[in-house]
Image (cartoon, rainbow, N blue to C red):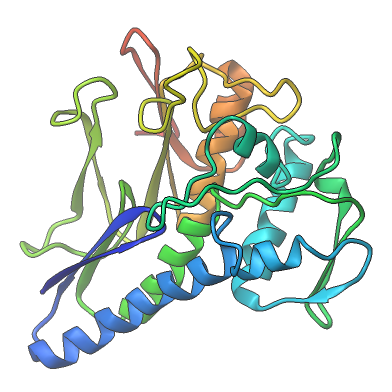
Length: 293
């Protein structure tokens, strides 16, 4: 069975391999889609009514937040510490200024108040109870973790099936085996020819997520895309694509973005130190692999 819906400005495609009735399969798939809805309502930077944007209106006061917001933000802050602030969830205002501030359904544009200089160190979190405190006015951006988190939650809903595939705009989790009893064969998009693949991998019970400079670009500014170095306010362009395979989609999502930001040997070392697998693509279309691929 296969169903498709739109969440997070992304087409989410779910396939399941099962001998169960269509009704039973459809119910579980709908529960998986519900995970995307809950995470979008919690983590969207583009809607004033989201939990994230409402929390950003409170500075200096602890705000209790849901696990759908707390967990991806907590993971993002851990990645910020690991990369010494190169991966930073407080980059939201920079993203707004760079033109990435339009809601994909309504077309409304966000223009949020924020301090001139902020970092992840201006966020204080407490797990008991789940609270968030902002030291300065800032805009949180969870674009590099929220979709992966939603994929992981959806995967939990589908784990009883013989096989399943959750594909959210090219970021995905493949559970079990495919319709032929084989590992899922996943194609990696060619950066410059959208209808072609540049490579394929086979995975099972694993996620693969890709961060690329070719999908979301600022048409008015050369070399500026949606992956931004929070320190320089510029986009790195050493790679055009970084794909990472990991046990969880949120991990693959965050590590692919972090590796893209770090670039070169530091980016590859980050993946190797985490015992993950990666494929980097240079602007000249050279493929660089690590982790035994």
